Image (spheres, rainbow, N blue to C red):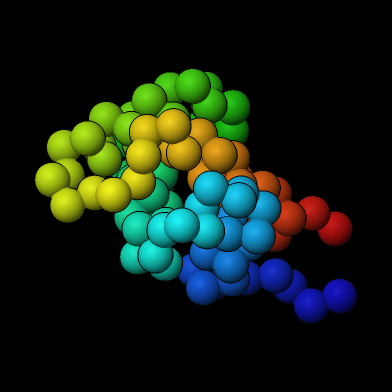
Amino acid sequence: MAEKIFDENDAVAWIKREEPHAQQYSDDDILLVMDIMLEYDEKMGEEDDYDLDSLVAYVKGQLKKDRDNVVAAEDVEGIVKAELGYEEWLIAD
């Protein structure tokens, strides 16, 4: 089986397919959420078992600071979970 490699375009497509609320956002909006998630991982030291609620709260907080942000706070958790699902798919056999 070929090794799966993270691809941001595939990740965005996955998120939009898995989370219906994500479909209303542009690819750039979804990529912004993914960038904030990466920032969180870097701050937390990429712990194997971090708190989903803490991650979602961090993403919401960062998005709130961005005046141009259009991602609604109530859609963040679904987008985050869908992105994490993509990551799990990458490492699954």
